Length: 149
Image (cartoon, one colour):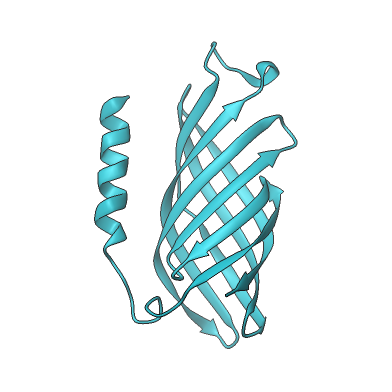
């Protein structure tokens, strides 16, 4: 378990040094995401996406993603793909094998539409794999809005 967490942290720190021209000079965006999970989202420098959410299936969800590619598809639509990790704290009813938490990896990809320069609408799918407490595939899918500062 410690080995997996160490590898994920090293991978995230190594990939965190990757930047592109578009990401430089951008600030912070914050907003909401609706779907599974539903919650708040923050985007840093057009490269690091964070989420804090809750599910209608009784757990708290936190995730962090590093976008490996973020570029134009057709004006004013962009697309992105990245890698990330997620953490879930389960309620008593959702615990599996006496594990109160879940840890997994995810590969987010999505479309971003900019009706205004500061306003972003996005659709994201994040297939992934739960690693703890058991290994199983899963999928996060959200529709959201962010305001860029």
